[in-house]
Image (cartoon, rainbow, N blue to C red; front, side):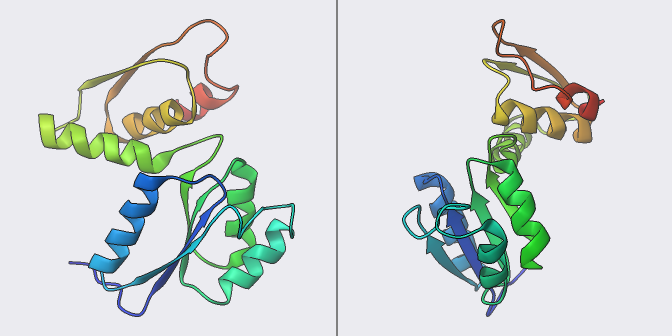
Length: 161
């Protein structure tokens, strides 16, 4: 089993979440590491200080960052300037942790996924985008039914293909 003794994860949450916070904190604890939670009052990317400055400061104190932000560009900037691995715990563009949880549920319930079909009903939001990307990587067929005006952002389908 992977262990992370003496490793620290910064939970940079511009957008709060009970489940995501608990999942990361419990996982780090079980792996022997520690978490530092930075709430929306502690961080305000681009408002209280620049994302670049935040990234450089946080990068000096911890080993990895998990960020829930309103802007995907902020996650990219954190990764660029922190010098650390940055986990996208949610952004306006993707929600890969949710897609990973969905895939794990499918594996638990169904077993092998290659050739399976997953259908998403609803708007083509960040969750659907990440689920589409996961499906493509795993050889899973992906179907979506979304109302007019709620389709994928430009470029998402091309990237998936």
